[in-house]
Length: 138
Image 1 (cartoon, rainbow, N blue to C red):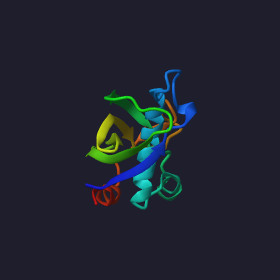
Image 2 (image 1 turned 90 degrees about the vertical axis):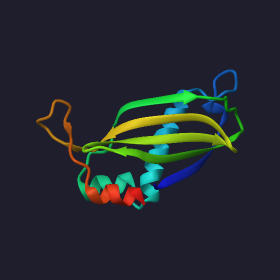
Image 3 (image 1 turned 180 degrees about the horizontal axis):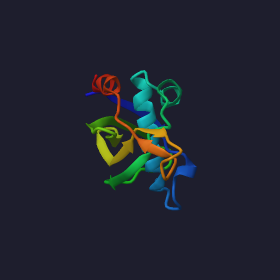
């Protein structure tokens, strides 16, 4: 299974008044991890939008569990991978580590969408190409 890791240094602006990561930042980093995962597989989202004619891979659902606090000045490692492929959507799993310690875990479900002026929101989900799934499986 193809995985990708990125290191993140926790900045002052990432923290709440107690000096602990303000939880919405985890979701921002999960999004960053998903983009980095596809980029590391040679399929950066910004290129796929143009080359494959997709409108993007918006989040449909997301969740996280927080195990231990992370503070200003610490460096964390975010590891992301595709946990499940579905026909028109996929699940990205994330783990946040500080050394060997797992600090947080999360998952987001994303859809593979194209623009569609006739769709209620202007986009619609379409089947994910098999070559994308193969590349991400490693």
